[in-house]
Image 1 (tube, rainbow, N blue to C red):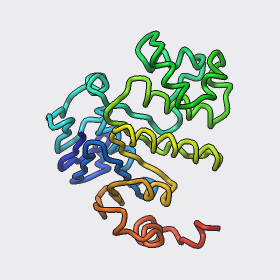
Image 2: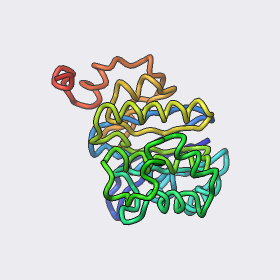
Image 3: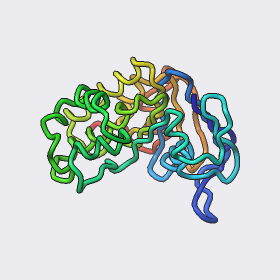
Length: 235
């Protein structure tokens, strides 16, 4: 559904990622791991056309869409949930959902509330006054209001309580079971590996691993690829 071929990308004269090939098959869950500063967010921006590649190409559903606008990819069925919640804090939950859905869409609202019942309880509340977990649920609601074909998710569990993280992963599993293709950047390595079909590991802007999660040992991921002592992580 989504493919990056030989992508170099960065900002201004600075190149952040180099020669990256990444494929998100139809209906698959792909996890992208890597230490801070590896270039993961940059790749997601290329994948949703928020950032044009310096070299290489972007394909969506088999068609070359390099140079397309983000809006055109949204219309084709791509959804990007960015790092940092990405909600309109001064708007109510209902107003945020209206923006995500592109207008008043009762079915879209119902899908969002079905996925996260707490949003129904907060429907007239200003988003900025909700808890961090509730704001993240609202941000994720954009992944159901338009029934996208591909969803890119950037650290959607960051800074949230464990119970909220569990709820979010249940939501992602539900999306996957419904046939949505997912590209997930995630800090919870064990959880990310547990429901991934394919894994890519990025370091210093280059891919260090691409393959099946069964080929990876969690301790090896932390130590070899992320530079984290697994004992410290467990503590």
